[in-house]
View (tube, rainbow, N blue to C red):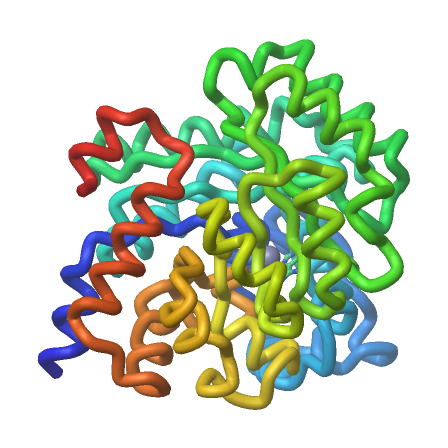
Length: 338
Ligand code: ADE
Ligand code: ZN
């Protein structure tokens, strides 16, 4: 349709995409076999009995933690540099087809180093894919290193120091830090010290907040971790003052509509605060989060928003411009994107 074409053609930036969340069940089974990685016994979890069973299971997540259980099992099949390269190149190919011009992708190094896959294996694979995507599609991208909040601050710091010692923040390989995994019970202030080190070193900062957690997760991310973005942030509407502050300070909120439905943060896309954000001038981008798990890539998310809200050209221009301005690329690239 016309709207689909319009949304496809709209120059898009993706800011909230976990590269491990772009692992399809098909690639999962293929890599498990190739790498001899055992999957859970179907006698204990019938979801692993077949490709179809796993795909069906992904349609019925009950919460963030229910999803994360499958997410961490899934990524256990990623072993070699070339596995990470294939995974990321497949994502970039799809993103390009969806009209993405610039992507900032999260990765979870601790989920790999904890199973003896070196940090450098992960990053080298991802960087190889980034280079190919830029050459083949003109798609630019950045990496955002996420800490797993269910692990300790000490563990996050070990990961941070490894990236620092390899010069990954100063040479531009890693554009910033983020915080993901189970939210409730793991507030952002636990990670205050590593965020303070990053702030002092001029490293950009974001954190998942206000996905399942209440608005204190958002305010603590901003006040204590000094984040420049909020990932998800849909519960921001529960605190009017905080909402106005986010608008005033031009904090980018990275929304993930289909994810929020799949993880039951809302029952339908129409419940998301899209209209409220537009009316209050809250800058936000629309993203896919973990597309292989949530049944849609970025364009599907854009279309779902349009279907639910029937936005105007002016609204879409605001969203597209906020996404470019909130990107962590250099000013020259931003100018080209605008
Ligand atoms: N890791 C991958 N996707 C996530 C999400 N939506 N929330 C928290 N952690 C995640
Ligand atoms: Zn996420």
